[in-house]
Amino acid sequence: MSANAKKANPVTENTLKTINNLKVNSPPLFTEIVRAANKYQQQCQALSQAGIVLADTIARLTVHNTGDFGEGLKKLSDVIRELETKRDEVSKTLLNDFIAPCKQSIETDHKDILTFEKNYKKDKENMRQEILKLEAKTRKAGKKTTAEVLKQQITELNDKIKESDQLNTNKLRDVVLMERRKFATFLSQFNQFLDKELDLSNESNVKLTAGLQTWRDLINVQNQLPGDVESLISKQERTLVQIQPQADNGDSYRISYAPGKVQGGGSSSAAGYDTYESYDSYDNYDSSYENSSYTDNSYDYNNSGGGGELQARALYDYESQESTDLNLRAGDIITVIQQDDGSGWTKGRDYHGTEGIFPSSYIEYISKFLIDEIINKRAPYLDYEYTNYTGQRFEMHVPGRYHNVAADQKSMKIGPNTKIRVWEPNGKIWEKGTGNYPEGSTIPYDSITQAVDNSFKFSIDIRFKHTIAGKPENDYTLAIKPLHFENSVITSGGDYLGVQIPQLNPPDSLIVSQISVREVPWPHQIVANGSVYFKYNPTTEDITFTKTEGFPVNMDIEKDDIWGFTITLKEIWYFINDIVVFQRPIYYLF
Image (cartoon, rainbow, N blue to C red; front, side, top):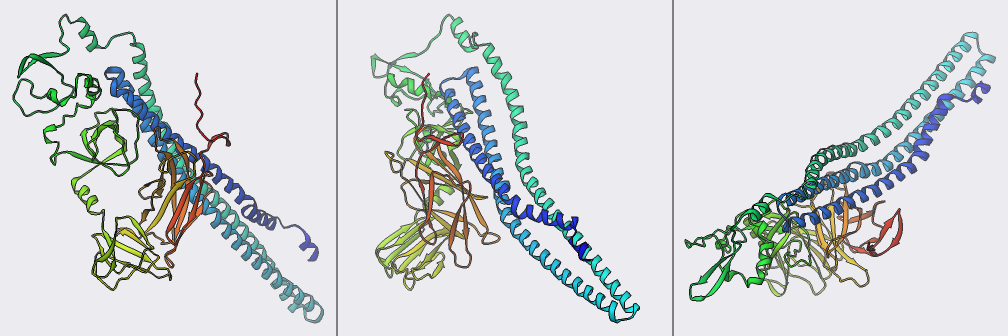
């Protein structure tokens, strides 16, 4: 028996080999895969964002160039923008459906194989002890008992050995299937990314094939004049401008232009055209004409102050050196003067009265009701130094944060659809909803107060800054997008901004958040890109963070207090083959 025990058992060998693969060999390899996938995802996202900037820049050519080439350039811009938007979806699928669950699986699978190994060794040892006891009984029966008793002991021993063999077989089956399920899960998660990649490839093939023929046709007719220009040249008599005497002075003349379809209400012969007085001078005609391509969608200037105007909200910052452009700040309310005619650009007016064009993708149209709601929510929460709404007052909007280091706050007013969450220095946390609280609701000195929309459970307060020498404090924006939720844009050098999170299921679910930093000045270059994980503790209501493999190497994050975090951009890095070669853009002249 002892000689047989020393022989290698192939079933046991394979079981131990598979356990070792799952416990020792596989985790580092899967970790490397996650790291490589993170790098790939960041590059894909950066490529997508750079592609969209390229599309917007190409679209600018169509502002001053119409006709067949204008249409061809617009189509080129549209194709690039659509494909890069699709690429961004592919990048997000890679992060959300592969990288995040794969990283979680590494930890879960490791725990599972350790538990399996522990139980396997325990079961094997118990079985060995039982066999040893039966062997001892069998030897004893052979010396002092009858043949019948010996036969029974030998039968029990053989049965136990068969049971041991069956245990080994079952354990081998279980661990091999565990390994196969691990790889099947890996492939299933990666296939979601591949499905999106295949969709992008097919869509790219269709759109680019169709577009190539259009652009080749334009190249082939480069030496031919467009029909409208040909007709102008061939026409013997043509009037470019209309010279008319001024009504009040027969010797004074004005030049009348019609740069766009402006709906007029008058009945004069110039009905439908703006008056000369609306132009500063003849010299300004060129700048007016530059915007004429935006007049295909007629706009009623006679109603410019009425409720018929379209309103939009800026989604991102937009800064341009072009005199015809309108600079935007994320959150600004813009009056739309001329909608996008297909060129990718919209003309609008900001609250200062400044007019200009901007990329249509930088705004979202909103209703008057929503504008009123935005205005009404500017101050949903007020607190006061003394009871009955007296003394020093502080106001806060949703999502908002206030660290009262001046004094205790002893009365408050909470606006509609709003709740406040308060953390006191003694660790106590409490909430209050909409209503007026003239007394009995003291917020102690050094407390932290959040104003949160009722539809959300809690808020992650994030402040963004940079340490780049020679750059203005507000020269960068941080976009942060928790998985499945809306993104928030935070300007460097400002106060905390609340990133609101709804009730999670389970409540302590990992909050996978994409982060991206871009320069505010044109061309809004991406200078950092990656991800970070947040986690909410429903028992203590504390929020923590974890730096992922994909956290940008040129950034840092610190936890300031129970709900607050500071994210810092430390350097501007540019990479070639994963090696940092310079910290500022290099421009090559040819």
